[in-house]
Image 1 (cartoon, rainbow, N blue to C red):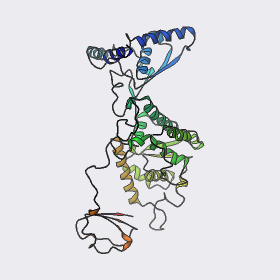
Image 2 (cartoon, rainbow, N blue to C red; image 1 turned 30 degrees about the vertical axis):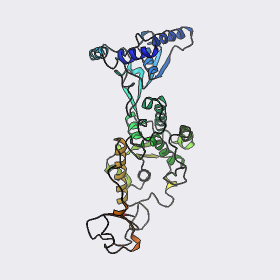
Image 3 (cartoon, rainbow, N blue to C red; image 1 turned 30 degrees about the horizontal axis):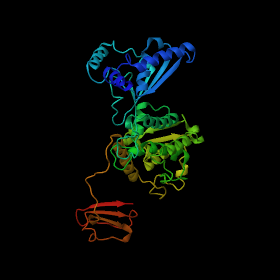
Image 4 (tube, helix red, strand yellow; image 1 turned 90 degrees about the vertical axis):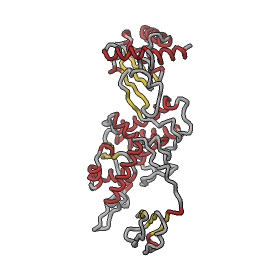
Length: 401
């Protein structure tokens, strides 16, 4: 019977007015207030149906002076999905007489990735606060919860990562947080970045603040936050948030999204010899979608042998050439675009064949083009200037230094 009334009241009517569960809840809350079980001012929260009921309490005149705020998670809206009730609500809403909700008291939090038919019902009780989650319908999710993208568990995990970044850089607004998390994975990536979105976001901060690999920018597999393991996920997340490095840096850093910078602005930061330049070059090498700067942020551990220093042709010192950094920046911008636009970076129509690819070492003194002319693609690896590679026909040439 409850399921039937839920289907009618939520899906068709979009109202708590006649819903038995809500009526029972309303009288119980009134009783708790009268008996002193509840304080005179309290908050309400709920996921899915619970959020729908919480929104109904906010609209009750008897609770106006008691409910300070309501937090809704993936909750259906008001007005129903189809039928005359939705049409009537739309007309009343247009006339400004439909809603009795004080929207300033409601945080309407919704998973923004994929589809969720329940939170998409009706008209939002308050403007939605979108949160990027890992798409549970994607093929790289091995054991998705039954509710898929509507799951409270999935939304909770995403909010935990949002919280870490918000604590570290509270100046970031919701739109920036969404763009930041979105840049860590693509729902269409057959390489599996969707299922690693939250783990990658955690590890990006762990590398900078905790340096678990003793100066190595890229984590080995056994140091990465394991995908599909929530215990390990929260172990690493809490280990990060409880660390002295995190606490000392919280609200004392500047986190800049690379997507908020023009290529020219990124190049200017790259070429700088100050800490900002060091931080930007680290971001490019780590392929992070952000630059993190702060008094307590020390990139020296990653630069013991000049790995982050600009190459000087005059002195021969440093490692990173301008051309390499520009290429790296271009690649990172493209990577972030693939992720934020949920594109597949791998062209599925391309098939590899060893018969038309040749991998050669330039140091093998490959002087004439005779040996490479028969290949469609040549990929040569070696030191810059080590030898002279010439092509004898219009084949593709890729040289990696």
